[in-house]
Length: 133
Image 1 (cartoon, one colour):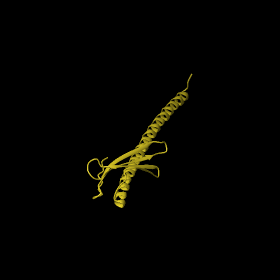
Image 2: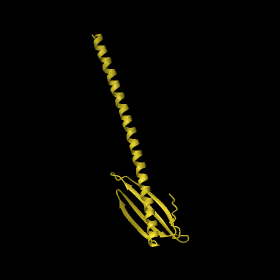
Image 3: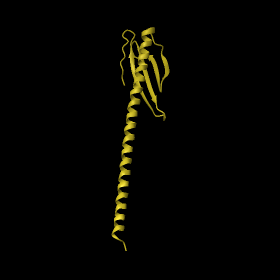
Image 4: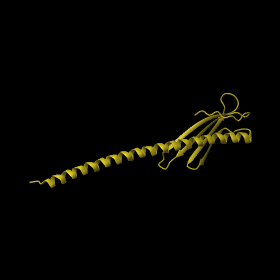
C-alpha cells in the first residue's frame, strides 16, 4: 500500500522531470536563434568586405589611369588579407574609355565565400566611375 509520502515524492519527481524538459527545450531554442543571428551578422560583414574589395579594384584602375594615362586591357588579381580582388579591363564597347569589372571575394575559414562584382566605366578625360551593382 502506498503512503501519502510516496505519492508526493512521485508527483515531485514528475514535476521536476517536466521542468527539466522545458528548460532543455528553451535552451535549445535559444541556442538555435543565437546561432542564426551570428550567421546573419557574419554574412553581412562578408558582404560589406567583398564590396569594399570590389570598390578598391575600381579605385586601383582609376589610379592606374590617372598615373599612366591609359589602361592595358587584361586581368589583374591580388590578395588582400583574407580576400581577393580581380580586375578585368576591356575597351568600352560604346565610345572612348574603358569598361572595368572588379570582383571582390571574401573567404571564411569554412570555405564559405561571398563575392561582389561591380562594373565601372572610366573615361580618360574625366576619370569618372559609374558603378552598377
